[in-house]
Image (tube, rainbow, N blue to C red; front, side, top):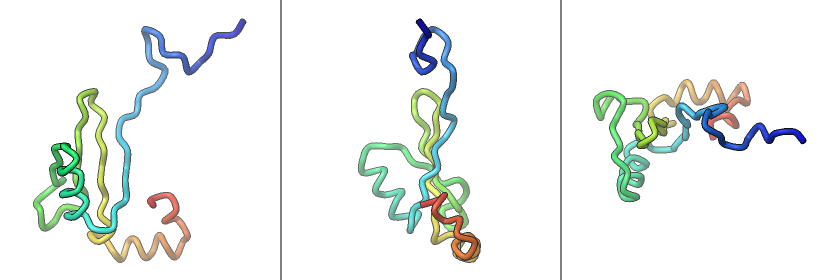
Length: 87
């Protein structure tokens, strides 16, 4: 019999470092996640931040990336049809 490679044992095969979530409006998304009980911090000053971060107890981070914070870059990704990677 073969061991299940996804079965969790004493040693973990892989760990998620962070997840990226593309959001339309960063400030609104920050408020929404805070209303769910998460502590959310901008990745810079409130006005200049391109993202906001949520750190979980296991060290995993959730990164909210605001499409409104970098519209030109997002338009280029959209033109290249790469936005499907970012939501």
